[in-house]
Length: 227
Ligand code: ADP
Ligand code: MG
Image (cartoon, rainbow, N blue to C red; front, top):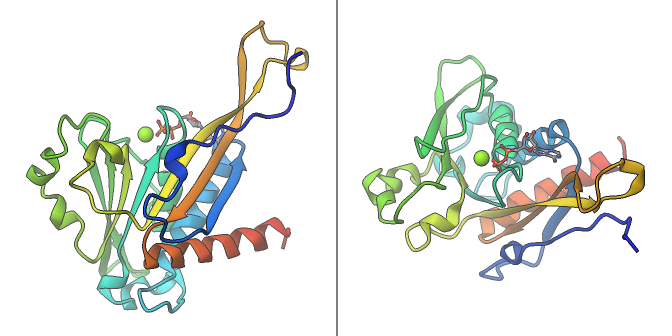
């Protein structure tokens, strides 16, 4: 008998390693557009909180203190899970509307975030893809410490490649493909799998991360109520 219920695989990596907080965001996202939208919501959470726990609007990026415009977010999941898609949404929330190149070969792609008027260099975002990193030590050569300075938002795909060098993230995002096993209604060959979406699971590993996460959960609850 072939089960027809969607099967969700929750990777072990989704469990907070430091056990900082037991708050978890978990949602099944179907389709690329919905994934970008979740990324935007996450991006707004990263922008709208400062380290003192004050909420301001994302419009006022230039007035938020520099150290508050910082976050380190890890993205875990297989190739094709949707990590870059989610990062694209975050960068859009940061005001970047151009293409988002997957930094698979360059390791990092940087974006300057400007104020509303486009005059003030308000902060920077750095999108890493460490898939091809040979050794975590290589991160020292590319100056990882500078990237992690206050005023920088760092989004890191394949963070496990940098184990031992990268500090604990504020947020750890784990994405897994949810699939329905081939059912007759999908007219698939026996054994074929139809992917229907992604399970996105987010945990916090710092106090700042917990603040971002609470903001996101609140935002998504309002969204879910169909406001
Ligand atoms: P990764 O960076 O994890 O390797 P990508 O972000 O490049 O993965 O996404 C791989 C593919 O998965 C893309 O074609 C994208 O459109 C698709 N995709 C991403 N998120 C979803 C989703 N929630 N549901 C369905 N397809 C998705
Ligand atoms: Mg990618």
